[in-house]
Length: 506
Image (tube, rainbow, N blue to C red):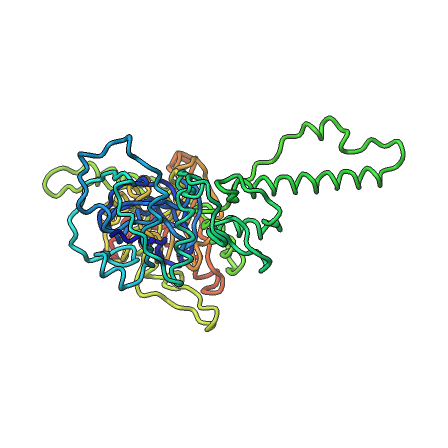
């Protein structure tokens, strides 16, 4: 007898409360193994493949690709034990039925007892610790599942109600639509303001309606059996906005002087295109929140200096031209600048700190975890080179290259994007000379590097063409004064102009 277990979106760590479905890796009817990835989600920090702690047949999926789900929301349901003893070779397409009949199987919540009896490994993201053999992805026809009817307990009623509408979420007609019977009272519905049930199953739809003051009881759902979908709420929001705009135009026309042309009659106004609205979520939303918090909480200041990078570029060329057994991998300019930053932070530890606002204390950090800005298709991310103060330029360069490749492929983990103590931002790759960086909260400083380009420069008392770069330091004025920030920036500039200065710290 099959048990239908519900797998919920687990806590992905790092304080994340929601995730967006990017791509489903399984379909309804597929056989999944324990710890097999079933969906790829995007959080505010990274792309994550979420494994399922149960082995069995997928009976329903919740949420389409592009849908944002909160932690704890149902992801899918799995009929555990349904695939045992079935002859897949004898499956006939003519005998297939809708997956809604699966809901007649017993429903069990994802508790520890159910996990032990079903061979699952618990509702966690990683480290299931089970030794179940990997199974090939197979599709089981729902009509071959065990249909023994077991009355769910009272504690399982909410799960049973959600499962009754689960096929609607995965694009399959529900059982009530197939049999022609009306849904049971309260099945798959929510309660709005305590004034009775409405046919809505998604918590995101209810939240969207609350945010825009939409009364769900007044809507007619376009889903199966009148289920209210997000598209219905979006349509109601647009209608409400159009009604409000029409009322505003009418009021302005009534208040306008006699003979004046109402705004609604203006051809230019009526032909104006609607503004595009882009949700601030995922990586873009996380960046917006962090930058806003930085500007709100940190009293920052910026100082900058031009430096002659000709000698630094010559040293890099000599390092990369070396041959023989001692020659290592190529060293990038960013790696050299990162090594200069770690040497500068050893001299000016005030900038490798953070501020504890509750305790009103400056916390100087013992090690340097160097973040560097990387532009990807998903937006700006800041991978972190751990323990950069213990690495040489070659080691830092290798780690930067590794993290950059992970960033481009969207495989950075949340742990690789957090915990930085100082950030290096090379915006010169975009062809700009200077900028005023915004500190990566809760850090205390960020060094910005512009493009290195030939410019007129006085060198040894004579005018010459040199490779010049602009360096900008934005710092938290709570952790130090301008003298310390200026000393840090001047030391960085001196190392750029005379790389031999670094020999003192090597």
